[in-house]
Image (cartoon, rainbow, N blue to C red; front, top):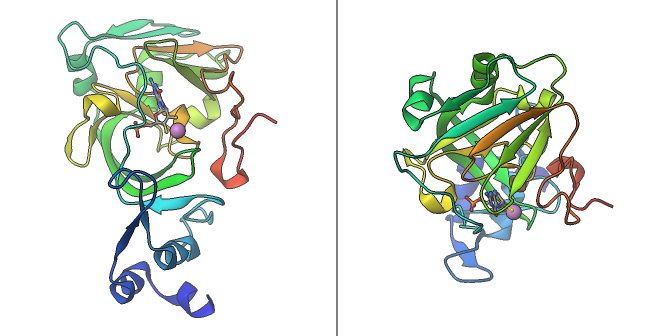
Length: 232
Ligand SMILES: Nc1nc2c(c(=O)[nH]1)N[C@H]1C(S)=C(S)[C@@H](COP(=O)(O)O)O[C@H]1N2
Ligand SMILES: [Mo]
């Protein structure tokens, strides 16, 4: 461990050969070698937190975790933005694409224990949307809503972070329908159930509105480094 923690990830991967083992459904959950996970686990993020949060393991690819799909990339798609804001807006996909576009490479952490490192996303910063609609000082939460009663919320302080996006691209390609096309929330520093796929409405609220998983026994704060998986 002492030696490994001093190796760079690249050197370690070369030494380990980068082999893979499958767990669960072959090709769906692909777990990296435990040794390789140890190397990742020894890495720290720029903010000093562990690269792999406690109880998580790195996987090689994004899994389709399902859910009630939205309409997808069709001309009729709209994003409604409402609540404690001065300028409610309904945006077309073209409107979203006219806003400043940002690339983001980040890690995402599913509460079922998989972590995808260095996932590459493209989208619009949530802060850009907040500036556009002029969010009021009384807005304390952001609620993302999707079809099928799926929703999730985050506090406004989390929403203002640079790495919180509305994403429409993944791995250099348009986001696939299974992963939330045309637009999904991306809240990398909370468990992935906060990253609502097929977002159709964003509400700014004074009171919190705990979402689909948060009202079914999962944590509302959902901090992977504190292992906040369940509500109690
Ligand atoms: N609309 C919607 N968004 C959702 C979900 C869902 O069921 N419906 N599942 C959540 C969960 S639990 C996870 S882990 C991620 C999975 O995203 P993926 O399918 O792109 O991997 O989406 C989150 N967002
Ligand atoms: Mo999840």
